[in-house]
Image (cartoon, one colour):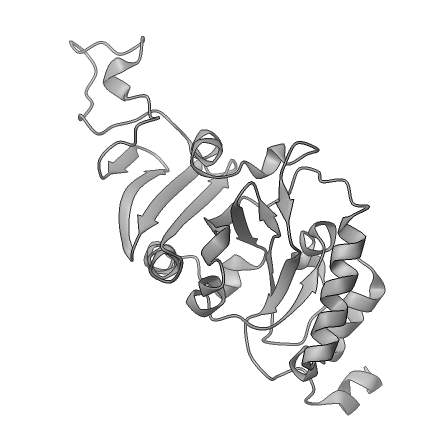
Length: 243
């Protein structure tokens, strides 16, 4: 469970008042704790973004995140259950994992839940970071989505609720539907761009599979918690004390 001090920091809302020295101390703390942390599979809540580790700074601009502060891998993954100030939800940006940074937690509130919101977010991320990927899985309603965007435009996309839909040229690692051993051209229909991979397969090929994080994963730096609104934390402290 995340330390109460991190939850208290978010709930009291002093993240917007952290100076350079305070951030450096928190970064040192996160890096020291990470030395003793055993990486384990991540629960993304079924929705996450991935961007290249060397250009991840653009992620905060693309998703309009603010007042970030350093955390470990284990602390940040529980972002959705952290206490926070109204209107300032935390999003977790992981340490670098095999060369990639993942963003997860409270994305439905921060990004939105409409298709246009999703596509706009991944395009913005790719414009800021050079490349971006989005993955979404909802076993309850059968939704499965993965998207690859580069330089502000979607390059390849798969979406499935009832019928699968493919957009863009197949990527080199993909197995095409027409090559599937069960495909019968006499009875089945498939376009030349129709693939067979779902999000669970695609993330392992494209960047990082969060469910397979473990001892063999290369980890660099520390993670971040960043908020969906700036400068809101220190307001209305008397009300917080009375509550």
